[in-house]
View 1 (cartoon, rainbow, N blue to C red):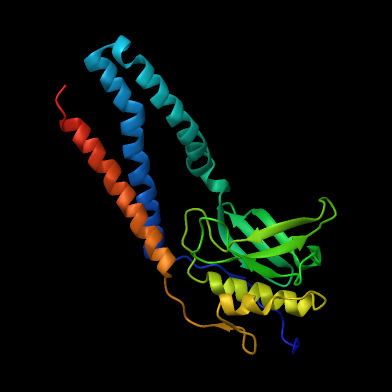
View 2 (tube, helix red, strand yellow):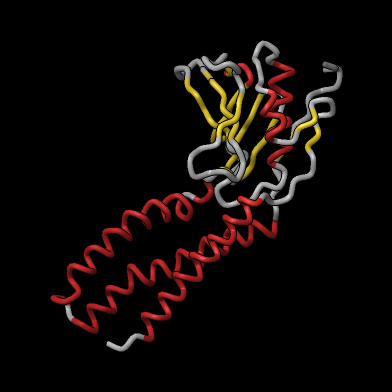
Amino acid sequence: MNTESPFQRIESTADILMTIVLNALFFIILIPFTILFVLGPVYGIYKRGVETMFYPALVSWGISALILIPVVRYYIIKRKKIKSKIVVDETGLLFYNAKNEIEEQIFYTDLQPSKQNFDIYTVTPVGSGIAPLLEITTQSEKKDETTRRIDMNLPLKVVKNRYTLYAHFLRGIVTFRPDLKVDPLVFRSYSIDTETWKVNNKGISLGGWLLIFAALAITALIIGFVCLLSETPN
C-alpha cells in the first residue's frame, strides 16, 4: 500500500438536524417522565391524602430515582465530560469531550491478535441491528488483554460520517498493523471500497428510522398519559 503521503486526521461531523431532534426527544421524554412519576405522586398526596398515596408514591419515587439520578448525573451534571468528538489519526482512535480532553483512546499499537479466525471483525449486539459494531482485542501497558467493541456514535450527537470514521480506522489498521487479519465482511458491512477507502453514500438506515419512530411513539404515549391523568376526575 502506498504510504508516502501522511496519514490524514479525520474528525467526526454531526448531523445538525438529527442531533437537534435527538436532544429534543431526550428532554421531551425526560420532562413528562419527571412530571408523571415525581410530581404526580405529590399531586396525588395533595388530593387524596398521605395514607392513600403513600405506597404508590414510594414505589413511583423509588423507580424514578433509579432512572433519573444516573440520567441527570451523566447527561446534565457531567455533560461536559460526555464524549463529543471522535478523531482517527496516525496514532489510532480518540474520543474527546466538550473540554477537548481525551476520554478514551485506542492506539494501533494496543491492538492484539484475537482467538477468532480474524483479528478484526463485526458483531451485532442483541437489541441492536442499526449497524454492526467493530470488535477488536487490545492490550496496553496499564491494562490486561480485553475484547472491545467500537461504536462510532456519540451519546447526544448523531454522527454524520461514522462510516467514514470506520473506514479510516480500518485503513490505519491495515497500514500500521499489517500483521492483523481483518474479516472481509467488515468492509462489506460498512460499504468500504478497499481500493480507494471511500464509503458508498449511506443515508439513515431502516433501523435508524425505526428507532426514531419508536422514540416519537414513546414520547407521544408519555405526553398523552400525562394529559389523560390531568383531565381525569378525582
